[in-house]
Image 1 (cartoon, rainbow, N blue to C red):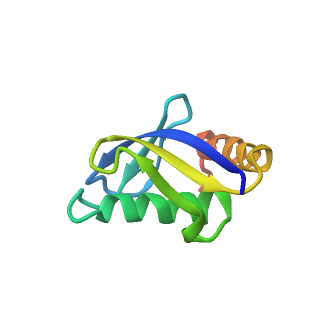
Image 2 (image 1 turned 120 degrees about the vertical axis):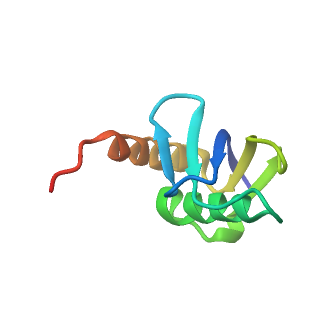
Length: 98
C-alpha cells in the first residue's frame, strides 16, 4: 500500500485543533495535552477527518510519538493526499466571513 508521509510540528494544549500556519513545516495546534498519547490521537483524528478524508486507522505516527515534531504516514495515493493537504491549507488561510 502506498502512503503519503508528512512531517508535522505540533503544539499541544491549544484552545482548538487546527493549522497554525499555512507554511512548511506543517504546524498544527492540538486541543489536547501530551499525556498518554492524547495529543497524538487528536492530531491523527484531525488529519484523517478534516484534512485527508480517510479513516482514522489510515493515519499513523511513524516517528516522534513523544516529540513535538512527528512524521505522519497516511495510507492512500500520495498525489491525491498531497492535493487534499494543499486544499486544506489554502482553506485555512482564507479569511473567515461572518
